[in-house]
Image (cartoon, rainbow, N blue to C red):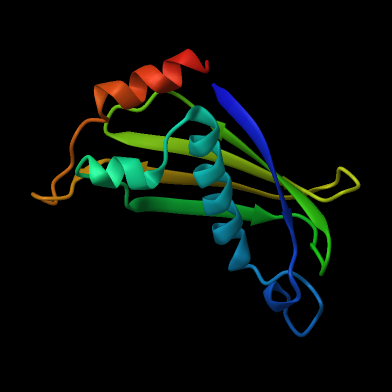
Length: 134
């Protein structure tokens, strides 16, 4: 398993009329965490796309436990559950600055050949890069 903590500050535009972070923003927080995790490992979605690989989201599930508010400093803990074959599974936990668990979720992405639009295996170089960080 690979785990990283990514911090995100809640912006005003991400809140609703009740003063809570709108539920739809957690999907964005998850994506920021995935993107930053890949950057920490020395690659990016852009590099995968340049190699002809796309990674569409196949599944998102989440549970809301407590509300986040404007200007909270959130920590998104992202965990890559296992090395990918044709899909990648990430678990997420979102904490506020007081260490309170606010949200949990799971995201499944698939590897897809951008030319054929068919599922494919994760590139060997990509899996080897992840192995180095385990």
